[in-house]
Image (cartoon, rainbow, N blue to C red):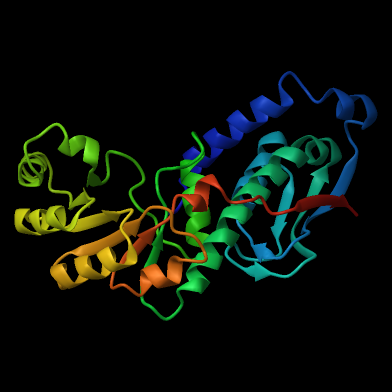
Length: 276
């Protein structure tokens, strides 16, 4: 999921407003206004790099003349320690933007790294790893980009670009068929229906759903659903999938596995800024 320039700038502006406020009191008291410097951004743990564009945007927002040199491509798996970028220019801008830039790289690289672990765990199955909408408010575009850097695939970006009929939606109508009929009349978007039982799976297929979300089903239930559907619609498994269980889920015959933990539970990668 590519991040639009205006979206990135808006996110960075908010992050800097939060951290800098009325000004960096410490840096402005100690560092001369015309002082120049160079620093390297270094990862301290193995992982997949993401967030370099956000870091660059941070420094450029503080000083448009800053030079930001990417030393690796986003999505690269690195050992540690590893230098990922070099920033040169106003020392005040470098020191003021340090924490915000590192927060972006650490958070997004952590998501990319966890995603890569899941992708590697199901290698050879042909199944796709998907993210969800369980993202940090305001950071969804960046976090979904990080998932893509890790080799995962993006589910819908928001409520306006995809249809997912969930259990609470079904509670408002008489049947799965009625829900699909109403959505079909309202949009041309593909329709996915969340199903908790094999009976609902059959109803969703009969109603003409384009995809089915198999929620919190056991391995036996997932295999039965795959057999019932027989390739007629796309099957997505979700609910409590871990690195220990993801391959077994992938081998049941589903097409995709969505994992909220990619964005809501990924540990940040340790990243530092070192003046040279």
